[in-house]
Length: 212
Image (cartoon, rainbow, N blue to C red; front, top):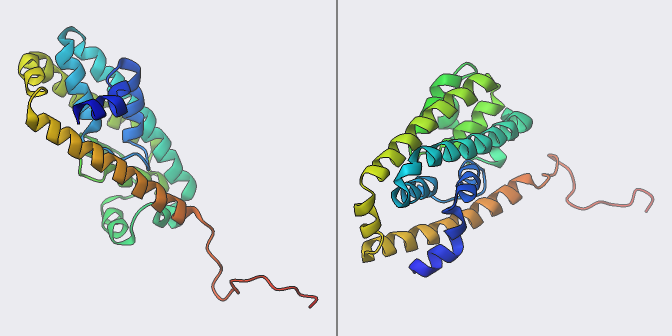
């Protein structure tokens, strides 16, 4: 299973891959709980002297992904959010996101999964919160989160690398890989269904010839 993990996600365990993973982690389709956090920790454990670089790269990727997700929310507007978020969840999020909640919501970026942060980003964009305040606050919060993770990984790297050789790590990685594949497929299908045009109320599902 460890071989499967590195064949599927090994690319992300590089500087360039870390940026890509950070962006995907904040997208509306890709689903890998704690994926970016694991990548930061593993890379920092391998090369402790570059822990600061991995924190920066993860922040850059995360910032880019959140910016795109925020822009999508801005484009679809409040009425288009149901294409991406379940109605039951959307109602709870709308109660917490206001038109001036940029700093409050962006600070939630410090909370790791399974917190549905992407849904909050979409809703913030749709509600028209200040983009620069939101994104800059988020960048600072994410930078703090990744710096703490990478610094701890650099400090306790030997123990982390030894743990990576254990059966427990193999089981965890196998579970995360399975969740990532299933979650991404489910998210992609839900997005596709939500983006399909819906017939207007009272409209006939079939088009008839007016000259018949």
